[in-house]
Length: 231
Image (cartoon, rainbow, N blue to C red; front, side, top):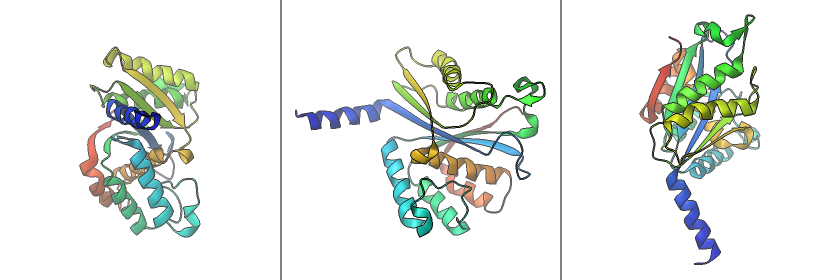
């Protein structure tokens, strides 16, 4: 077997035994534009390269010409009309992604996550991210790769964030499971951009915004679970 064929075989095996989870959120924990909810959307998929390529192709071929050269297209991007927004969401739903999400009412954030009246957003973010990831367990995958959007973590270093997530996952993992957690700028990862569109669509649904119900109907068959934090 030559080296190229061996590489293809190893790559195929890794796809079969690995789970890739991508997460992003809608906005910040503090209220913005009268929005009551903070939403974290996540998804896993059998072939993460396929979804990344498909979303990039859609972006570079279907969006207005002035937007095609941008590094990323966020749910909140200006210049995206209602028709394009819904068609993009339909394209995402066709990618065989499996969605799990969580949300909270900003007014329900516990005092445990505040110090001297100020929110320690890093601690809160780590807590809700871990809770969402736990919904993917139990699993037989031997390798789990978790990708979050790069964001400021008030009260935590990035290493503390990663170790906090791992500490909560390892007790429910098989002993031989490898867990890797990365924070990546969404501008260089199309799958995190997909997670951004998922969280944005779910936020519009929860906030009962125009198109919110239409957005939810498009992705509802891809949803495996959703949970409210701190009810």
